[in-house]
Image 1: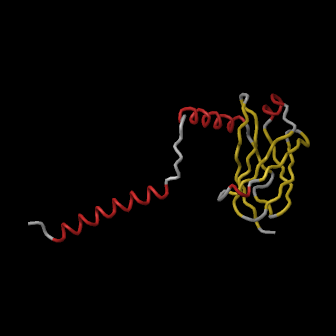
Image 2 (image 1 turned 90 degrees about the vertical axis):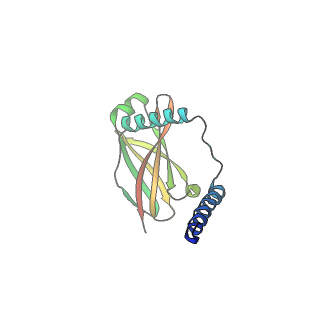
Length: 148
């Protein structure tokens, strides 16, 4: 004869399974990645581009509002591609609804400047769009934006 504790454990186990299935169905956004091999190749190229370009920021903390972003890129890349302007995107790490794009201009040897504006404080990503092997890659630097 089966004891009541066995029924209880069986009931709890089945309940957990059904709850897991329910939560899975409610939270699945329907995205299935196709061409995963090609995505992997793109990721490998991105990592190569990150090694190729060494981007150094003058400051790793900026303020809310208007800022002058100064950054430097290594010599080889500048000589090979002759880059005078770079597209820079700011992206708040919690949501892409605050993404903004700015243009950085070459001001002297490998040093670029962009006037950017942060709406509020927090962690932000700077995406620098640079060419590598006939493609444009977004190279990311994370910064902190502090209050006014």
